[in-house]
Image 1 (cartoon, helix red, strand yellow):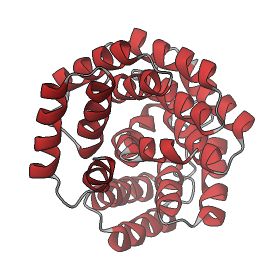
Image 2 (cartoon, rainbow, N blue to C red):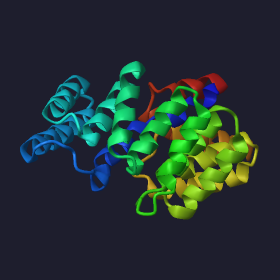
Image 3 (cartoon, rainbow, N blue to C red):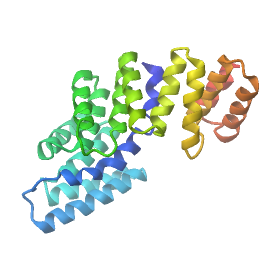
Amino acid sequence: MKRYNHFYRGCLLLLFINILGSCAFTPFTGCSVEAKKSADINVQLGVEYMRRGRNDIALSRLKKALNSCHYSGDAHNAIAVLYGRLGMNSEAKPHYQQAIALMPEAPDIHNNYGQFLCQEKQWDAAHKHFQKAIENPVYRTPEIPYTNAALCALQHQDYATANTYLHKALQKNPKFPRALYQMAHLSYEQKRYKAAREYLQRCLKVIAKHSPATLWLGIRIERRLNNRDAEASYALLLRKNFPDSEEARLLNQSE
């Protein structure tokens, strides 16, 4: 649904943080020690350039990584994420599949591929890969695939499943801001405005600063609860800090 598209903003940052977390699951690669070392260095550089938005340099580095060691699951995973980011899904998919073939137990790869499949509207396949990540007993951040599975459920209007996954994410990490924000948004859509306020306030306690999305959601929640002072406070911050945002435009249209 269109109103949930903004949930995907920032998803790639989570992917980038976890791309290199799969190395503990890396089996024997078939590459020499030097080739593997070169590939690892280029993967790290490629991921860093992705963080900085330098996708052209990132792609060059990740191709170098694969040229050094075509059996690097981390390199296939990283370049698949990048191709997906660039909208080159036909190039991304075989790299995801190769990464999973090389590192079948790496939860981060299953999480990333689950997101990719969800964007392709392959709901059942996506949830299988999210579940594969969630069920890995040594995965340190299961709240991430739980939250991404919830987002995927929202994309095909399965609100009950989304609610279940978000609750499980918060059981694993009660301070996970993306799950808190998404519970706030889902509660708002379900007209549970007091619950929405509570989840948003919990989210705001753990994030570094407001975003246009949190401010716009706060405005709508407080408007429904007839709290004009809080609504005005959120609106002031949105107009002051993010005057050119889509959310500021929506605010101006709503008044």
